[in-house]
Amino acid sequence: MVSHERADAAAPRTATGSSNTLHRSLTLWNSLTIGFATVSPVAGLYAIIGVQTVVTGGGWFPALALCLIMQLLVATVYAELSSQIPIAGGAYKWARQLGGATAGTYAGAIYVTSTIAMLTTTAYTGGVWLAIFFGVSGGTGVTLVIWGAVFLLVCTVLNLVHVSVFKFLISLGVYAEIVGSFGVALLLFFFFRQHDFSELFAHLGTGTAPSQTAAFLAALAVSGWAFIGFDACSTIAEETREPKRMVPRAIFLSLLMVGGVVLFNSAALTLSFNHDTLLLTSAASDPVTPVIVDNFGAWAETPFLAIVMVAFLACGSSMVQYTSRIVFSMAREGGLPAGLSRVTAAGAPHNAVLFTVLLAALGLLLGLNDEAVATVLAFGTGGLYAMFAMTTGVGLYTRLTGRWDPSLGDVRLGVWGLLINVAAFLWSVFEFVNIAWPRPYATSSQAPWWQLWAVPLVLGSILTLTTLYLLVGRNEPSVHPGKAEPQ
Image (cartoon, rainbow, N blue to C red; front, side):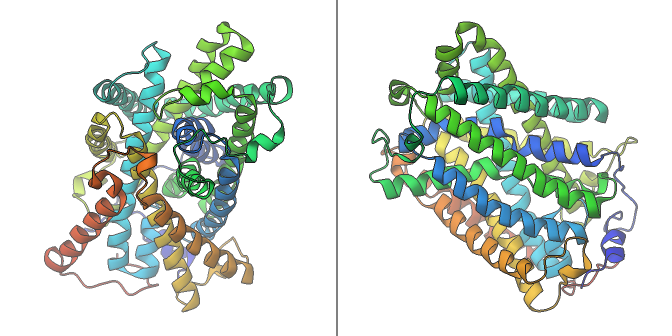
């Protein structure tokens, strides 16, 4: 069993015993806004709306709703774990503390690669909207990759400046999402609806999916993107005041708030869409702005795109911070070069930030293929659901074997915790398989086999390399599950 004292004691030291401490400068509001910005209603919904429209033609609202409900179960397990082990690295550290060093190594490899892929996806889709904001639309793969790199560069700068600037941007992004995106959705919903509510559940027959069942499963897979990133709150636990109380609240509330906004926005947009707009949509196009312009007038286009850009930049900047803290935590444990665990005088791991951004930038090269949008989305989503499955699986196993006692944390759910853990694990496994499933109609009928099987191929490669590292490159003894690691 992991006590509060052992969990905290494991936090501030590197593998060599030196102290590398992050500064506790974040309040509950800061943690909540970072979680909100990372999940991001605008980035979550607008990044997938083109693909969703192409594949289903409409009627994907039920898939979004189901995905949110099941992700709230996953967030509940994360809240339980974070109330007991509030350490930088989040799920990576939980796997290491509860399952041992080997489980931690696999978790770290999956976690850091999947969050880097998630950052790549955000940079690519954010670059699409950045190009649209500056009047460049319909670009080729090369053009979109360049815009994605520019977007990533801005997010990097925002992570390297003073933390007060970063916190201001995140708060501004949240206000932009609530006032702008949600406000626009309210106006659309109450004054500009074109369709009955049955439209939310209707397959319009304009998508590429061969059947309604195929359309729903594909929509469920793509919807997975809209509800990831809430675990960012757990990776910044060492920078949050009173983390055992505040981080679990931030995890659950950020997903609940974002989920509510995403569902409402998707409903408002669906009920306001002109069917001709759906027919003309491509995976990398913007079907949202025409709805805004048609209903509010041409004057609304620029301020709306500005709101979207602020939200995307807040999301991308949060993801850089989110992933860099996982890199920092792994480096501190000796799983990555020690230089990545160094912090500045202000307590910021700048080396980890630069390492994270460099790898994410290399991932942008996948977007050179003009038809790779769905594959890039799958890359950014599939790995996180593999991590959700591993985290809830480790939690379930150690809960059942008595190696983890959730009642020692501040979140105590009793028997409901076990039932929620089981459901969260089964859902995570199902959704990962669903995301990884090859769908030519979601990418391209001419897509090469490696593009269709991209998610299992990449994950399989990561697991293979990690296994080789454990067998050949490492001889240190495994930490006994449930015990604190030696200091």
